[in-house]
Structures are given as C-alpha cells and as structure tokens.
Image (cartoon, rainbow, N blue to C red; front, side, top):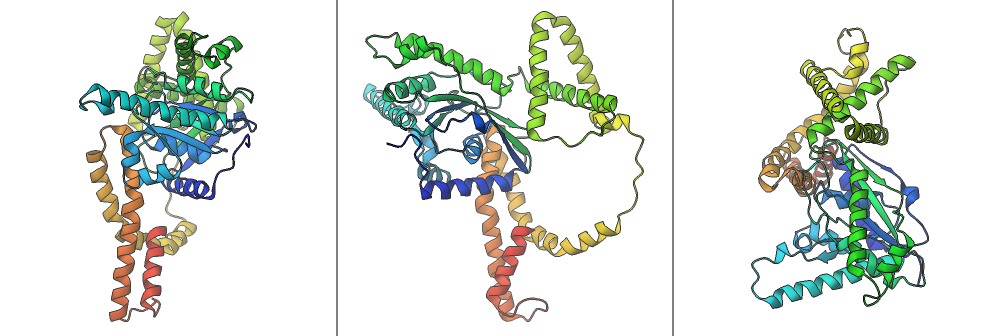
Length: 426
C-alpha cells in the first residue's frame, strides 16, 4: 500500500470547484507552513472552528495532500454542500446533541456504534498515508478563542497509531485559521499549518498500546489537553474581540512608528505579515499580563482611546506622519478606465443587483450567528448569481430574436452568451 495515496480525478475536480468558489468570495487566501506537512506519512489536522463550512473549505483549498474530513452528519444532508462533501469522501460524525429527542437506549447505542465506525474509517485513512481533519470543538462559534474541545481527535489519533504499527507514526498538525472580516465579501483569510506536535514516546506507547495494557483514558485526556493548548497558541486566543481589535491597533501603531524611525514608507502588508505581527503582540501581551497586570490594563485603555480617536477621524496610523493630502480631480487614465469598463459595470449592476440584495436579505435570516453568514453568502451566491446570469442571457436572446439591436451579434444565442459573460465579469 502506498504511503501517500494520490487524490482521484473526482477529488481533484471537486477541490478545484471549492478553490474557485473561495477565490470569488475572498480577495486573498494566504497560506504558510506547508513545509510542515510531511510527504512520507499521513496524519491528523486539528483546527478551531470560527466560520462554519468555510473553515474546512479554506483548509482543503490550500492543503498540499489528499485530505478527508470528519463532519457533523447533518451537513451531509444539505443540498449542494452535502453532495460536494460526500464527493470529497467526508466521513459523518454523529454528535450526542444531534440525537436528542430520539427515544430509547438502543438509539444511543446505535449512534455510538456508527460514530466508532466513522472514527475507525478516519483513523484508517491516516494510518494508510492520507490526512484526515477534525474540528475538536465539535461546533462552529463566534468566540475570539477556541471553546473547550472534545476527546474525539485524541481518540482518533490513538486509533491511527494502533493501525499504523510497523509503519511511520502519523503526524498531528495544528492549523491556524485567521479572517480579517469573516462574513464580508472580498475580505482576506490566512491558513497556517504549524509544526507537528511532538508527542512524547511514553505517551505514544500508552496511546498505541492495547486497552488492557495501557491507561487509554488517561492518555487520551493528556493528548486532548495538549491539543487544546496548541489550538490556543495557533489561534492567538483572546478573551474577547475587543481585545483582538486592541492588539491589531497596537500592531499597526508599532509598524507605523518603525517606518518613521527607519525612514521607510509603510507598504501594504500581506496576510502572513499581519499574522506574524499579531503573534508578536499576542505573545508579549500574555507574558506581561502575567507579570504586570495593572500596567497592561492601563496600556490597553490608552490604546483603546487612541483607536477610537483614529476611527472617529477616519485615519490610519501612518496618516499621522504625513502632511495633509490635497485631493485633485480625476486623471485622464481614470477617465479612460471608467469609459472602458462602463459596459461591464452597467450590465453587471443591472443583472447582479437582484441576487446581491436577495443575499443581503437572506443571509441574516438563515444564519443563526455571524459564523454562518459567510457560508450562506458563499453557497447561496453559487446558486443565485449564475441563475441571474442565465435568466439575463435567455431574456437577451429572446429579445434579440424579435428586435434588431445595434452593436449586438446577429445570432440570438451569441447575444445571450455575450450577456451572460458581461454579467459574470460585471
């Protein structure tokens, strides 16, 4: 059996669809740490879950190897999304809360047996050289930190160790997911594959031994605690989103001050640079809060006041070091660009305004929390926008067959395809 199974043609095709959808929704999806993914073995990815179905899609789109997810069974019954997940080989996970209301102890026993089969299937993938992925929190959320995790990831890893005996030890890789505005169209995201966790040999022996000869429960809990600690570090866990905003303001303030002292113009930063700067602030904050809590509280109050002032004025940190900029009229280049793009903009606005407004209305109604907004917008848009383009194309073709319109192709079919293209680009 190959240590690193190759993805099938269907898998590669469906992953391509996911990548295309994400490229339409996000302005940028940056990735770091791919060199931490071993090429000679399989393993398990663990990540926090702040953005619904978008989280596994982002990881899948940037992971360099074949990847099989474990996901809540209910998701596989969703239209479109469920079919895509099943095609990618997603394994259903049956949560206890999903079975509430089902009478009888037999139903609970059946759920546990089905869940064990799912974990065994995921563990077999990891032992055979593929990678599997779980969100150990068990549910998506809007907190600024991971919620308490469950033992499923540790139990899956322990089972993979048993199945992989005689072969390479599966890797256990924490994944960081970072969004600058997770529910906003054309925002940015960053996925970071961190260095695999170093699991001590004695713990590996306890996890991979037979249940009769090892403290399996204690070993699983120990690994669960290690995973939870790793997720706190990889996600830059904070008490609340206000603290996250304060840290980002401290980061941009230090960056602007450093540019002034070195006489270097502040350039647009990448998502990876942004995360690295935030990690430095986060590490310093946690260290100083433990030793100087009063001083850190006072500093946070000052940074918050500074942040409120800049926001009220509509300024950025670097603006404080520049002379006021005079605003002139549009340049010839801008005028020409506007004229050239006018047909795309006009058709795009006319056709896409309806699905855009419909999505703005539907997203809050069908989202239980902010974590679901991007999922509804992304997958709803995959249906509504192409439907609007198709309707516009058919209407244009029917109109062209009855009316002679200058500057349009003579063929109604060609006219319809042109309108579809202009709608998509616009």
